[in-house]
Length: 482
Image 1 (tube, helix red, strand yellow):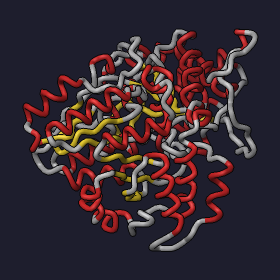
Image 2 (spheres, rainbow, N blue to C red):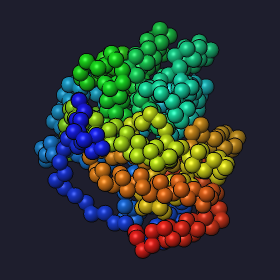
Image 3 (cartoon, rainbow, N blue to C red):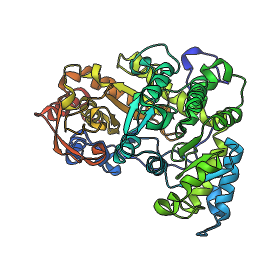
Image 4 (cartoon, rainbow, N blue to C red):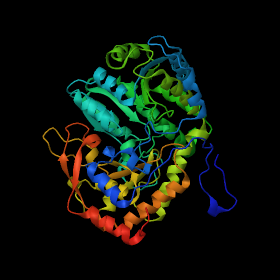
């Protein structure tokens, strides 16, 4: 239930928490910001945190934990095997998902590694509404192929569709028939589809995907890392979910899907991850990989303090006051940017506000990495660290040619319970200034290009002197201001 203000002009999302611990931030002068991004190879991942004012690169592992999570960390049972902390986490999974079988992993991509190792062999395909970077890397590492089957509305920057992450169900069934079920390693539904703007998937669509998988004997997998936001959108946008409790939605999904995995760095605001399933045979088939890749079955590569925080965070993910914070703050930022005329993905999804860089710098070719260039420019403009979610985040084809992204996005993630509204207004203001001076933004070229997950640690150089020109314009407009 939203809180309505008496005077409409005062309407803002209302925090249902109070801040009790703070961390000092630093805002460098614009000249130092330019030098910092150049030293980082124009890769926002390689910036030092001390040089950042607002870190909006991700919401993974950087959300503010609750007082109950912090308190839970002090009762951890530090045992290699049989830790009571694991059994408290297992009980939380039972409460939230209704599932008994739990395999802990140190984070979400560890679960992806295990699933790819178990189900993908050369010539097999993983069908997804849309890929995530590490998921695709694990599938291709095993010799498989990722096929994306998101509904066409998901690739449109602006439309009125409430669930732009939905599978194209007709295409899903036709693809399984064309490949044959034996050639499909698994079908993966990503809640809150990351690379197309954090767009949600409807409960109806998720259940229909599971039904198609069961019809053909194909393994259905739900990546629930962003399920928290997705459940908020189900509750507020999907008629059948309006009167369902969050717990009922979680339980229904666990009943329908063969496998659910998640990163607790997102779901529950802790550190860690897990693979869960009602099917004990599936769990037995995956179990051997936990000691091989992660650790023993009751800690899975996670320190026990984080397991305790993960358990409490999962329980809190049932609370609409907690799970509404992210989507409502993101919607506020998206509306601010949209009102300024900045091209953004709409409707607002979860995870963060996503700037449409194909419209921001429309004349820049894909091979000059427009989303990365805009991201570097945003850092220079305000000390704000976004993440590139475009061609730089793709991987080259086997023949070495560039695979151009369907969308070139600069993502401004909104970590939960971390930033204030005044800070979000600052973000919108600095991005608006950059939008008004967008003709100054130039492209980037590779200096060091890793073969795998290049967006994490590759280095690029600006083409020409556009960053110096941007700094000069900043000084003209802002004077001595930071």
